Image 1: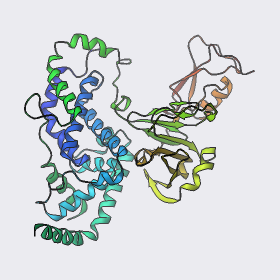
Image 2 (image 1 turned 90 degrees about the vertical axis):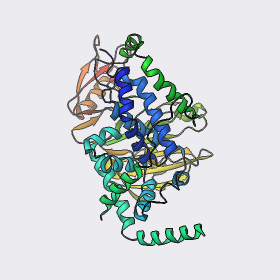
Image 3 (image 1 turned 30 degrees about the vertical axis):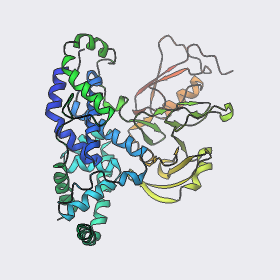
Image 4 (image 1 turned 90 degrees about the horizontal axis):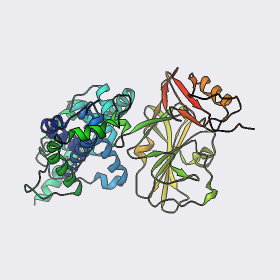
Length: 173
Length: 276
């Protein structure tokens, strides 16, 4: 039995999916520098494990997800909430800004499930593979993540926008 | 605009801020982290590995079992499921199962059915976290259950959670009780580290599946009864001629594996003495 993914296929995979994996890692981790580290780490592991895997993309997604979880566990909750790219979204509309900050507060499992569903457009089965869990777990993660986002959207967006705008005006003075 | 639409738009807007390319060696930019150097080398050598693929193939082939696909979940970089009773527990990246010495964790580990003796005075390595998973009638539950008083939800199951100082100096215990699964999980981690992610990775095993119990050390008769009561078919290891009172030396698939009901579990007794 030969290697499931040979070196040429791996090279093509990197070229084809590098940007997509970086976007996925960025959306799950919430930081550009972390995304780069995550993808590099995932591809390194893919390189060494390529003989044993059939789907490099699923493997890479799963590795990125577990690295995010491991990093999350190592850090305190508060330090996780510190955004390394706090200036990146200053030019976006306030609703997206609010949603992005709320996404960063979700647990990595919920965030990854939402990213895979609403950005990657994956099915429950595909998300289950990417997260290494069952389909029912995926549905639960998505539902709980959305519920939390909805509970925040029902009231504070307006006030948050007002506060943010006021802060921006203050900062600019 | 509803939440899903806002979320979808936000994710697509945010993705525009994601990096588009990894840092390439050697001179485009200084690597910002050691791991980046590692991948830079890895990618640049990937092409040259083609030439070495014959050698590599021989090495990689030794890792394959019966030519079957190995899911990422079974590698050292991903999670895998282990079970206890009706609860499925995801073992996190890099964590072992029951890696203890005289009951004391020696690395980040999930401890299922704890039965180790603490009398050995084995030291616990610095910074090691562990999660003890046990049933609600156990000594673990008797010690920790009262800590869990805050209602929560775990994978769709009602649960209770709470935190307390661990008897270990510098460690905090996080307790999760899932009554419907008859399971308690106690995570002990160094102060400042969150272990909640691991504790919430508990879900219900469907009725079509069952967990291989720890039957090593039990008599053949008792082990067979337990396995058959769970819906497994018991097979005898090659060369074995077990007696009812002979002790089980090994079980395959191993304890805490989650298998479809009706699966065959093989017991080995050769080399072990009888119970009496």
